[in-house]
Image (cartoon, rainbow, N blue to C red; front, top):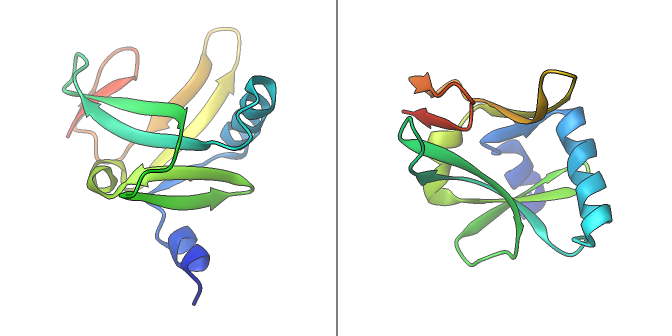
Amino acid sequence: MSTEQATIQESPIQLTEGAINEVKRLMNENGSGEKYLRVGVTGGGCAGFSYVLDFDEKQEDDKVYDFDGVNVIVKQLHEMYLQGTEIDYQDGLNDRGFVFNNPNADSTCGCGSSFSA
């Protein structure tokens, strides 16, 4: 089994079609075609942890996952906080932006950008 196949099967996160399309649009718009989309967590926020979602270079301790041509990198240490998380993109009148649906979150803040586990 190739490494690429193994990483796709083991991915701790899922990106919806809307999220994939928006990431591709941003990569094309910003000229970020050679970079990866980093998904992770960091300490802070009103609930304890905040999500990380940004374009970045791959580092040695990153795992790479492919979602329909979008290369996502996740630090192995962050996977336990992200396991089962679905990332969606909403483009409505009231809600616009990336949304994290994390089944491991004990609580979330009102804006949805931080959580406790």
